[in-house]
Length: 191
Image (cartoon, rainbow, N blue to C red):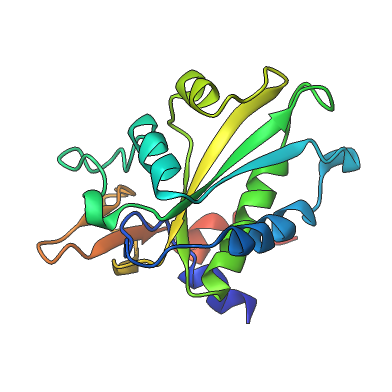
């Protein structure tokens, strides 16, 4: 059921490094992304698949992880993603990319969850360094990096408390707590 997939689709940041993701699996996930709706049907998104250990190791230092977790610099070496999808926008097809990246990323991540995988969309990345590392032509804007792997962390959804704090946090057992607003707080009316 789609609700189950959506609820299981969290921003996972710690993975089992022994469970590699094949290029074929990444192609399946990108296939879902590319069939997603596209504004004006322009389809300006392109994807660079990163699966080798060497390429993953080069990409990792170019990424920032979990801004609210100030005392955490990202996953330790044996919990790092085993694959990435670098989402690119083709500027020869469109000057901006509107809602396309979000729709495509959600489709890709829902497909990952369905296969027992998880991921995290990373927007705070060193774009020029990534461009140079992977020889990405100038026509492509580096939009996001989607980190993927088999999650080794537990993420718990809980209701935002009375103080309104929406910052995620980790407890002593490293369980990731994710506050979400109540449905009654996001519906502003019914006509």
